[in-house]
Length: 221
Figure: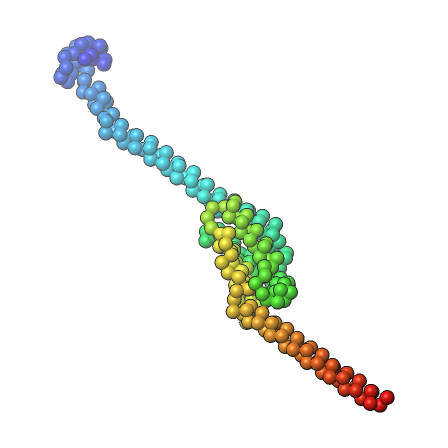
């Protein structure tokens, strides 16, 4: 080895340069300061730094997804299907639980009731169900996971609060399948049968009266 100060060739193991007196242990100390163990620690630090940077990037992406992308996407789909405050719906969206609640106001409930009356409360699909199915399909296609979309009402206290529900692409609850709707359908059928029976009775009575009147007129002339 050589003296770092004067360049004199020094035998290995000497602590001081025999020519200039330079402390040779300083050089060894410096060389020993960067050991394989220290190098490993530095590499781990750099690796951990990259991991933390990756985690931070993922967190930023997730925040952007849940706080910006999902609300904007859901709002756009609901507007297209006319599920808005302007159209008498109270809209509640929870991106974390993937739940959308559409509470129908008085005017919307009236329209739904009119649609049910027009189908005599049978199992026919209503226009509102097609809009819900379209919204469920669009949201499932544009976002991650399975969403739950519920259409509810609070106008009629004696009527089920939940009217329709889609989970993912599947309709998992229909008002037409509830006990209340089936009861209304049976009442309609019974009223229709009673009316038909009454019409038949009136027809028979009219026939009998006509026959008697005709007989009486025949006897008179």
